Image (cartoon, rainbow, N blue to C red; front, side, top):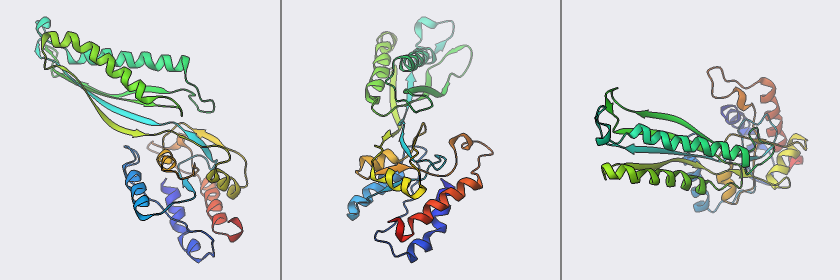
Length: 280
């Protein structure tokens, strides 16, 4: 994304000088990684200002191949409240870690079911909705039944999957466990907090934004990407959207992440084609 932004800024003067029948807007958001909060505010500002973009190019790393779809990203924090006691007095306690583990095991079972039964969307590296637990924390000592535990988990849904139903299944499993927990202490239980919810994205091959980028790149090629972007938010706001940017996700989110010069050149060629009058 930084390379895409840098190239856009470098071409700002060319866009200003070009005699174009359309306006080009740069939309720089914030907190994309943790829930797309900046894009939500940006879209609200667009509506308030009466602006209705005809095309949106999200410059995430697709190898400069227009991406027609990506999965959604939905994360929750689950906090489990138990009842502490000495580890020799387990009947008097409610073990927060053990109850969290039962829900985590159910999430693992759900992940296996989704892998086997779908729904499926061919073209993704994992053509089904995935589930994963990323953080878990709890307990204070070996001889104390843990009173508190928290864990974070996510679903990455293929377009068309019902994430609300998946989350409802997780909550239902937790509520079933609370029956035994409350028999010991009514103050125990599960609490869920939404951390982020980025919708999936799916565009048709004849979408105006897809066709625009294909024309700029002189290609008919398309792809699908497994990571999430803000494209679904723009699409839900009624803006034709495509994901296309330099670099590859395989080289991102690591200590030596990079974007090749060849990818930068391909992106620069796309932007140059956009501010040529003939490209309109």
